[in-house]
Length: 275
Image (tube, rainbow, N blue to C red; front, side, top):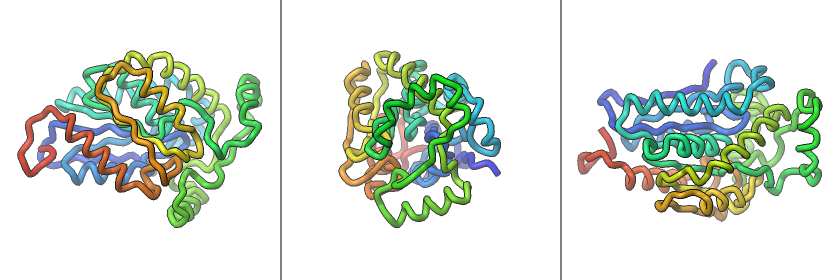
């Protein structure tokens, strides 16, 4: 069963939002965010990244270039059908949104980068995490999985318990991180960090001060290195990594919508965001 979703209005919209999910996740983690944007007048698209979805065994053979090619293809597809396309992502998805911005520049109406993961340096990672690159450089990466563990990127205990139950059933994503995929993730980080100065789009970065997977270092690097003059970095005080589901989710949703509204060039009716 695919977790892809496309929320499209019957009356054609001129603006669309392309969403990318996180590492070992699925579009499910973007569903409420997408529904919120759709309810405010935008067509929204989210698809499983290569190595995710129905054929989970493919995660062991996926390459970082597969993720990039997928993101580029999806953007070009939507750009051929809409006047304006915004890109947004969480975790790995945020990195792919940055890559799309670096490649297509002003063709991208705006970037919303949530929990930008350019370094694996969050507070919940084990003390020996600095040794991970050594293991990844060997065949060990094909035989070891790093288990998903508390707090699952969520500070809110009630929401965390719900996510734990879903992960246990593997309904919404994997409950482990294949080291072979992390190996590709680290290579993607290097490519995107190298190309940050190519980004000149309007951009909104939202990151938690207490992100358990990746510190605010990555978001700060993006903010300082990109060429964009129109940029904003918001630091959350009461969330972990999964900012779309944690204590400040309503604030995050509204800031994302505010960003899109303020950067949409299409002339719209007074009482509608789009269409």
